[in-house]
Image (cartoon, rainbow, N blue to C red; front, side, top):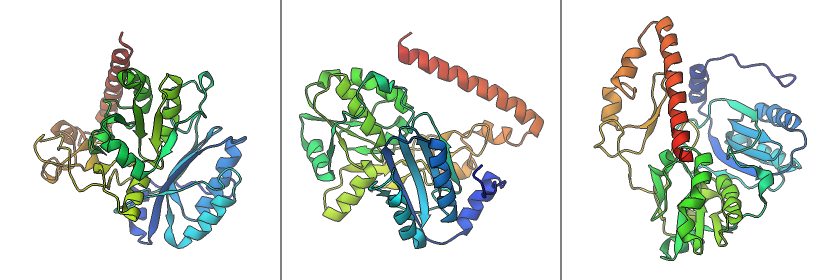
Length: 345
């Protein structure tokens, strides 16, 4: 723990309620940078000390290769936050992506973690030139790619993200992790190897690495959307461009999504009938499955993904502990099976 900072012993629910009770305006943002950080522990301590002082909340990953941050800042202290960030040698000039919507508290605590990588991609960075990335695309250029029948647009996000929103005509791989997508994409796109390829993701960080990976695998004309979907929405609004993004943009905070296009392109996972693009986590903490629900089903099932989850959540603590152990074993078996299928074994 950083010297001078007290550990917050409140429960998750208590922190969430406290965040909701604080009605001061907050600005939700994300940013990343691939930059050499000599001492990640010292860098983390520096961030934690200052951002705690400023009342920032969020989830930040720090590694020797850089930083990946999703967070919110008290709007009244934005100038102080920005001035301090830009004064740090590792972060000077870093661009921010400001959230489109601020419906509920996006974060309820400040968590800064040291990781091996700022995005889990499963790649051996020593095996290829990670700096040989594709050129950026502006929102206007992205629209031109979408309108071009000879261009290929690829969603570099997970299937639960693209399910609720994606660009017109984009290829949306059926994967649950970025690591899996990087394994599949070169093979998936091999028939398009000589075409113009545009990659996009939430804020740009995944596409940065993916563009270098595809170029390493022989794709010669690869570009990626600068600032991702978040900055695309800003550019579209400021420049009066046609919005080619359909539906919601999934975000990795308490909001779970922000509206980009007016269309609802997905359906409730429970009834399979009603249109919905609102994600929920099952109230049963043993399960905590992410699913899409319509208002009727959420009310009917009281926030649980199944009747089984609703009933099991009422069991005594001792029985729930046994159930949790069984559930974790089941999840591991499913993950092993999925990995085996992916490898073609």
